[in-house]
Length: 342
Image (cartoon, rainbow, N blue to C red; front, side, top):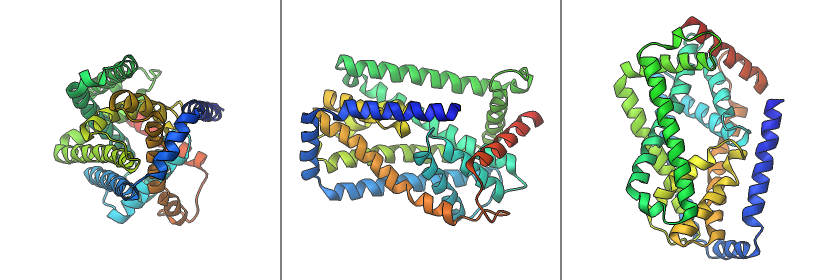
């Protein structure tokens, strides 16, 4: 019931914000004009840039799996990654792909189930750390430019608050892991089992620091390639914006669209780009919003092959697909067992 209510909320927010962004006739005229004058060559470049994102993310996951002594072929890892990408984009919630990817990985590694789950968890964590670093650097370098208007200033302060919370959360988990405090928490403590998982992941990947640093570097490449994807979409629509300015805006968009109140960030993404790009870069509001929508379409296009991979995928020990609910149950059960074993 909670998931149904969350999905209804996300869909309602998406529809409401998209209507708010696109209902203005002048904005629609700006969009139509931009599409009429669009340069398709930049759209091809945008697709290529996002393919680079996917390659980098798949390689990062491969590196993290090897740290766990899980040796799958690169095509196998890439297939699992694409399945996760597909469901993260097409299922409400934004993390359904991780559940399915984790489940399929468990079937490939029956003797290393804990390591498989920790690799999926740390893949998320290392990506978050890289985004925090990029956000902090870009806002530090471009703070005065980003806060020129009252509206953009409010969003920058919101992202700074989110950045502070993220840093505190990461430092807290580092301390809990470093002093081995997770096991001392009461069993009734909220998220105790998740903290134990995080602690186990930190300990393992700290010991294998070369792989961790490589994964972090790859994460930086993946995030910057994502920024580049959006930039090339802007150039497709002939938006006159400098790369450094656009990149400074992207952490704001990434943070706001990651809030799970809409379907895959749709609606908030268009709104935040409209505010930031029109307010700071003199991009027409309709074009700025369209950059968000078309960038999302590029992501969907590049994620769509994961659906075909899922249909054709035959995990070890299974000859048929099982309902997603059963996958969630099995993954949650294993997470609980990891927490108890620690």
